[in-house]
Amino acid sequence: MALLTVIGRGVRVRGRVTGEADLTIEGHVEGEVAITGTVTVDGDGIVGANINGRVVVVRGAVKGDLVATDAIRLEEGARVVGSIRAPRIAIAKGALVRGHVQTGTHPHAQSSTSSASRSKAQPARAAAPQVAPPPRAVAAPVAVKRPAPPVMASRTIPAPPPHAVKIAPKGPPPPTVPALKKGAKGALKKKAT
Amino acid sequence: MASTVIGAGIIIEGEVSADEDIVVQGVIRGKLDAKEGVTVEAGAVVEADISGGPLTVAGSVTGNITSTDRVELQAGARVVGNVKATRITIADGAQFKGNVDMDV
Image (cartoon, rainbow over all chains, first blue to last red; front, side, top):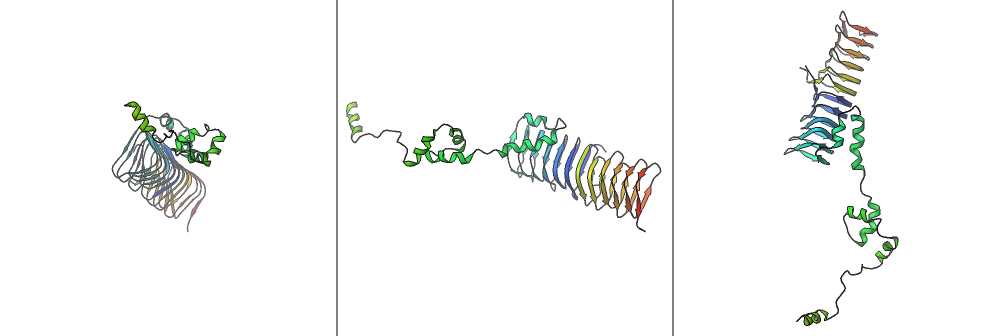
């Protein structure tokens, strides 16, 4: 029997699963999975781990990030909480996903299973983008002056000098269009004719 | 065929617990708890304490073995560790270093 590995229904693995083979998970795996072949999480499989593989097929439950160098297929019944990243991603009807999804060739994805460092480097890199939200506390005073999407606000933080922030709460902002005097519109109309 | 196979080329570092038969052809480091049979095939490497039911070893095991049933060390097996079981067979050609404890 060649490189076929099955973690059956009655089996629970706590730790790291690595290697160069195909892996089918029907039981529980907690920890980390880094395989250079195809990883299949079957209908009854429950995985609490980041999964790295060439092809990742999910029909069961996964809590963790999925990274594949070739493709990810979420089939009916799949429940995934975590980001998924692969050159090609298929999400079938009836599959649930909660997390970031990214397709296309990616320098990180390409290198993830090609070297021995794959398993150690992966979790930290995968977590990094989620950990950095835009600085919200600094954006608050700007929002008083002019409601703006958070991305815009964070970009305009350095622009206003300190006095602008102080003036802002005292009164309403100056009108952008100068008010016309009473009857001015009529006068203009008369001139035109 | 047993429903759980740790194939050649797979390395598990950690704890494996199984309620069903398990066949090891790859590498397990850590701990292996089974309620049913365990087969360590030729070429497999288990660096872990093993507990379970009937146990057949043809590969390499480093660690203590506890079985509620029989332990069979086949020719070509290499076992370093203590073996506790109700029955035990050691085939000609099996390498074994450790104590044997049989319930009498």
